[in-house]
Length: 219
Ligand SMILES: [Fe+2]
Ligand SMILES: [Fe+2]
Image: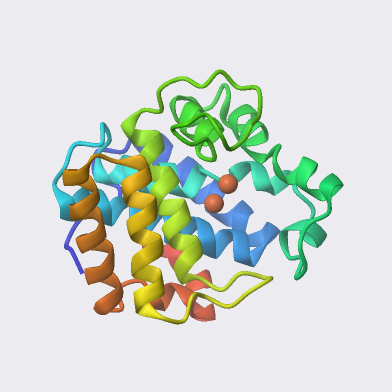
């Protein structure tokens, strides 16, 4: 474990506000809460371990990871926890979560994370959602959170499937995400960092139920 103060360079107001967000995520939906923490940890570890410039400090990466799906606070449990593929109508609701999250942080201390929240499902070729959004160049912060979000999804249980069971399959998925979002040099360091963390089981305690009650007390 890297000895880094998760909240270094983050203001007291941001730190206190984050605790409120974490408690809301926890109270609202346990899977959403665990996914947000895992994404935050992965984003922070990528910044720390790769030593590359993502336009964001490790603490800010942690914050952005915690906030990326905050718009899902407004998505019903029956959609968030659905074990079967979503219907078209349910997808319409789900695809609104980046815009709802963007709106949620407006006028708050987290407003400057709004663009990361809004764009975390957009891809460099302009696909993804929200649809109709001008396909602007995605900045490095958005790419980092987008990658951490996707990597989290590979290594966590989801309502509709178990985590990807095989390290080789995870490796292939991580490689395809890293190569999609970053140049070769950054992609290689991200792959090495993520696969190293998985080999050391650095993120596995996040899957344990007990973790869900301790995260904000640690801050
Ligand atoms: Fe999302
Ligand atoms: Fe997510």
